[in-house]
Each structure stands twice: as C-alpha cells, then as structure tokens.
Length: 115
Image (cartoon, rainbow, N blue to C red; front, side):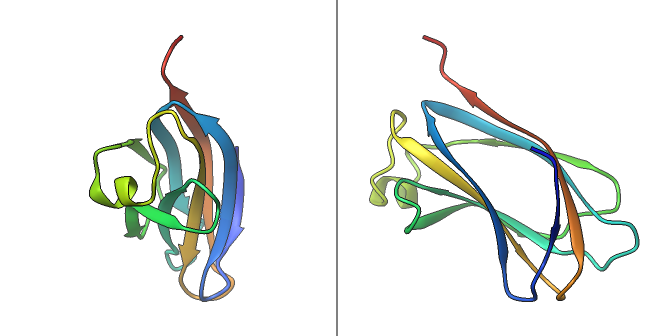
C-alpha cells in the first residue's frame, strides 16, 4: 500500500481487513512536502466497529520514518475487544490535523505466523 492521505480536519482513515495470525505491522510515513504535520494513529479491530489503539496519534517528520508495531495479544484493551492471535483482524490508519494537509504512507507490510 502506498497512499497520500488528506486530513479532513477531524479524521480520515485508510482501512485494511482480512488478516489472521498477524504478529507485526510495519510501515513508513512522513509529512508531505512543507505541509503542517498530520497526526497518524494506528488501530486494530475484530469487527470494524470497535477499534483498539495500537499506536497513539503521532506527527511525522518530513523524512520517511519506519514504524514496526508488534501486536501484543495480551494487552488488556485487545483482550477486552475479543481479539486473539488467530482472529481475522482489520487495521485502520487514522489521520487528524489541519484540513487539507497531507501525509505519505508507504511500504505497509503485515507479518504473520508461519504455518
């Protein structure tokens, strides 16, 4: 996945779904050009309705930053949402900030357990 996302001032999201046995999510992100940084948060869900934050909203720099998120299935919020290591999960990238500002999202990779 490669995307340039515009914040709408409240939140915009790019969602990916249908992944089981996920151990890690990695991606790169950066502010676009000279735009004011748009905050990026990452969320996981079992049903696409209830979301658990796995990365707090963070403002990127202008250089691509690599983020590697190991999914902690023992995290109390993940447990209370009913998400287990074998669950078919969805990820959401949520963006907040000044309306019309952009962020680059690149090299999204989802890692799973080997059979």
